[in-house]
Structures are given as C-alpha cells and as structure tokens.
Image (cartoon, rainbow, N blue to C red):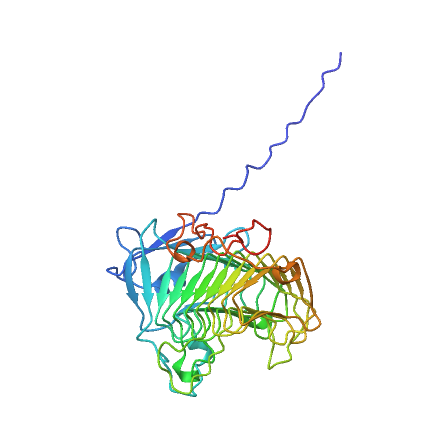
Length: 386
C-alpha cells in the first residue's frame, strides 16, 4: 500500500481591523493634553488636526467660543468615516460671534476660507448633535461627498444656516433645524435655512428638516444642476424682516427649487411629504428651473403668494398635493397636475391648524413628532402627513 503524503498549507491569519481612536474635546480642556476623556483638548480644530479615517471626535457639553474658523480639509473613507459628535446626551454649542463678518459690512464679500463656523472641504464625515450659532454661515461645505449631517441646529447666523455647494454628491442632511438666520451685509437677500446651490452632484438627500423664520428662503437650490431629494420636511415663516434690516430684499419662499437669475438650469428635484406654510412668498416654487420637478403628497398653507408656483419654465409634475389658504393655489404654466386638492375641487377643511407639535420638541430619534396638523378632515390621501 502506498502512503499518501498530504501537504498542509498555512493560511494567513485574517487581517486585524484597523485601530480607531476617540479624541475628546471640552471647553475646560487644553490643546497640550493628549485628547483622552481624562485629558481632553480645548479646541475642535486641534482634534481635527489629529484624527484619521475611522476616528471619532467627542465633544463634551458646553460652549465653544471660536476665534478662528474650524477648517475640515481631510477626509475619511467609505468604510471608515470620521465622526464629529456630541458626547452621549451632552449639548455642545459652537458660538462663532467673534469671527469676522458677523456681520460683514453692507455689500462686502466673505472670503471663501472664512465662510462658516465650520468650513468643510472633505468627504466621508458624520457630524451629529451640534448647535452652531452666530457664524458667517454655520456650516459651509464646498466640494463635499458622502457625508452625513444629523441633528444639527444652526440658528442666528449671519448667513445661511447650512450651505452645501460645488461638486458635492451623496450627502444626507437629516433632521436639521435651521432658523433665525439673516444677512445684514446683503440686506436679507441671501440667508436661507438650508442652501444646496451653485454646484452639482447626484444623491443629495434632505430628510426631516425644519427651516423657519429665516430672512430669505427656507430651502434654496439656486443654480444647483443635479436632482436633490427632499422628504418629510417643513418650511415656515421665512422672508420676514424681523431684524429691521434697511433696504430689505429677502425673498420668502418656503422651498425654492432651483433657478438662476430667473432662467435656471434643468434639475429634476423631488419633494415628497413636505409642508410649507406662513411664508412671505410662495410655498413651493421652481424659480425658473427649466427641468421636471416632482412634488408629491405635500402641503402649502397660508403662504402670502402661490402655494405651488411652477410656471417659471419647468415641466413639473404635481400629484396628490394640498393647497389651502394661499393667495393663489397653483400656477402651472407648462407643468401638469393630477389628484391635487384643486383638481378634486370642493371646500377643504383641516383636522388641525395647531402647529405646536411639529414645531416643538423632536422625538428621541430626532424625527419630527406626528400630529394631525393640516391633514384633510375628509380623510383624502392628499397632502403631507407629518
């Protein structure tokens, strides 16, 4: 009998996961520390300088008063994003009042590198749980890809609360609150709650945003040439000069869906299950966007101008939307509409006009609390349910 020799190959051991580090920052820290929980850094910029892909920056509660812009120029990776987040349930506030251009002189231009309490040109970050106030913009993200911005509060800034622009794709803006932003340097012409503008890039999604009492528009997609998806969001009270700014020129739309100088690029933005109410101008407007915008199961209520204004050159498609109490329900132009309240006709009454639930505290997961606000009393499947 022949003995068979069997060769046993040694297989390489599985590669160990790359080690990641959590760096801590606290208002009473010191940048000479090592960034541990026991010895935290004092500034967010110090932590940004040392993080690598997969690392986390944990901000302890308290106020971080900036004297320079927080600049984020390094990126994580798709499999190892960098996280900047509130530590557990603590409440960090970034106060940028001491930065230049807070506010700028009338007619001045903010240098690009100084736009934002957080100025970001990076990808694969997750930024969550921060309150950002009094900045020349709160977050300004240029050429940014595949980031998640979650549960941010950007208010009382001297420009748009959150602006994404340039070549930017695949970003998720989730459960943003952006309000009371204004721009004295441009007489109220520019400060929106949220702007995704002046650029291109597919896959950008806005979900669960609340955009209110901003001096210009709630949401603005001016000159952004790629489709943006907006879901489960509300815009209200925008476009009023609550600050007594002279030569006021704020627009006051709830959702401005593109356009550029009146004749904008064709961008097929999609809006679903969203509400626009009590704004100084239109609820939803194409603003000269020449593309095909889709607006579905959304509500325009008591806006000073048109609820759904899509006669600026678009070939929009409006389906199962509700318009109540606006100066004009709809302006269609070359757009089409089916199954909307004005198509169905009749008198539309509402289960509730009390906005306190959806504009009050959020759920523990950051989502907007549900209510019967602006729901048709007849039970029709028309308009938003938030």
